[in-house]
Length: 250
Image 1 (cartoon, rainbow, N blue to C red):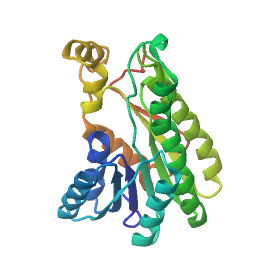
Image 2: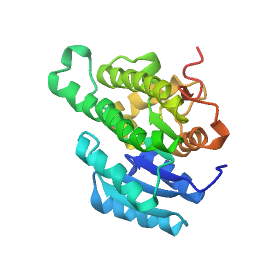
Image 3: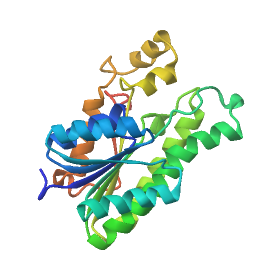
């Protein structure tokens, strides 16, 4: 799939889609750095990835802070000599509820992670990839970033912003041979979905709106991410790939 064994960096790698993506790259034999905010869980994940045959390290990082993201990318390059693939998965569902219940605090809590975190990650990833003349960045958006949803104003707005950043960065990176895309999942069986829906009835109602009549699995999203990052997608950039069971078909 790859011309050589890629060096992969994944933010928000400890749970859900990020974890599934790390496992998928490990099975491809990748060299990787996984990151998140919980040291013990991160070390355990790195050990699990090494057991699958990958060279893997964990770096604790909060993507809301420029110096920490800079250090994350610098440590990746120091360990492996380059950076070929970056998956910017760190994110939060924010505070569900109508627009009338949102505040400065709920806005900042959502946008600082989902938007600023993506911006800072790409800033430092491109800083390495552009001089290399190659690289692939995959950001995590959401079906809600394309359609919107009542009760998810901050999350929806933040994912719209991620898609805008993705397209702008793709245009800037293209002349250097760097591709930038995003995956936009529909409802996926994760703890974030459980927190967002807040109960079985609301979760079932959300899933009922998916034409395939089920939630996605983290592994299904991970396979799409691996594809976009790979040489198989070498002419794909600036795209938002919906992986949503047909949610955006109508």
